[in-house]
Length: 341
Image (cartoon, rainbow, N blue to C red; front, side, top):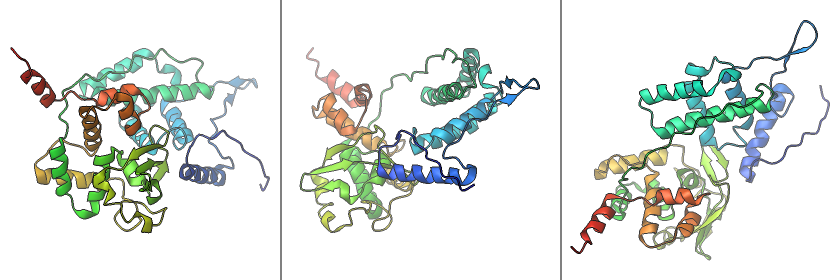
């Protein structure tokens, strides 16, 4: 007790707020365990004095993975989602199995059960991603000699998307009360993700250069780097410039949108405001993220190139941007009407 020790680890976070959150997490671990990290369980010793390989259940391995990497390698929203997946999908089915019992057959059988329950390909893919990460963590920790041959991730089929039109967006904004409207206007005219809207501060608004610098995302009260891991600049739309006209008078570290001056929105406040506005306008079946879809789709319709849209949307891979270039029903109808025969 009272012995000082130096701990060093390569940085796995890219922003100062995320570094502060990680520092707090490490200090809590030191207070509880005396170590700034979660060590893997030590192998048990046999009666002969040799090391006996201890089995590790999948649930234990998954919890170890999330505790160790949840605040460093993963986004807060991803960590939260993975914990929900573990509780609802994995622990009841394969949580009791040791990590070396998770074979390709076991994974395929689990996927078959999820198909029978009507889970979409995207949800099943998330389950398999957590299985892969957990088993890789078990191998790194010495509880698994080799990784199984993972089945291919489920691929969602292409669908005809019903995307919000510019008229729909205008109706939604007009139906949104003033406290929430600015957040929805920022999402619509910049394509920022919900977490990026919540994390936007006045220091990120540069009226002189006419840009918004997206530096952080805020989810479940935790700030981290944007999903791509990189900052990006988005030009300020003319409709937003007037709303930002008093930005010079605002404290730089205050949040742009929130329930009170300078305070950020909670996790679900803006999403609920969007749903309420949709109900008022008779637009059902849309999500807050569809404002981002509409932003990207309108960029393509206006003739913007895929690399330009990629930069504005903050996509790490161009293939992601191309998936947002929805072929919607009005586009199909317009193409057919242009036939000359």
